[in-house]
Length: 210
Image 1 (cartoon, rainbow, N blue to C red):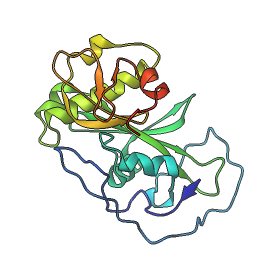
Image 2: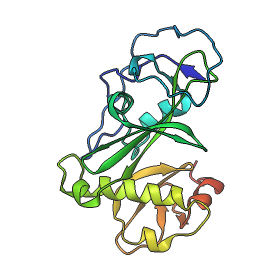
Image 3: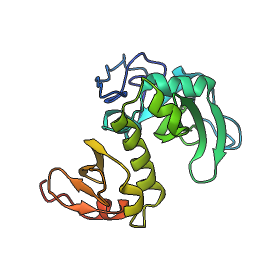
Image 4: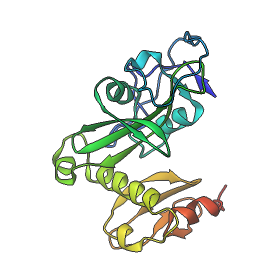
């Protein structure tokens, strides 16, 4: 389901923007999609106007989640100025690198009345640049790398990739709020106390504290 509440160029921020800061999205005035339903060739590049994009429910959840670092202003900048690429699994992606971090915004516009923001995530593009940036603190950079590693190797246990990370602010994966300490080869759920070494385990085992 897509909504026009808060277009991609709205001047609001997500639940977490870096350096431990947080803010709440302010809902913009509701607008009805003004693009008529049409059959679009999936190979045609999507629009570069952020104001045309509605938000899916999934994308709105991403904005609120700790450790995602996706904001509406960033999504808008990625659509306007980011690199555009086609991916066979997700479709069209806009990618924008800022302060060593790559913001990836996935969009769609062939099955909805108007273009939509489907999902988004962050990746470390340049570790040294990210660490040196005033935009991110150590927990931010480690969170981005750890979340990316868990997603990239979803089916595998990855203690070797978890062990170098230090994440003190819990972030949510599969219903668990997790963190990890120096030298730990697992992440701990701060609510139920369970330990995990893969994203598959995090997604399959419900949080016992809920």
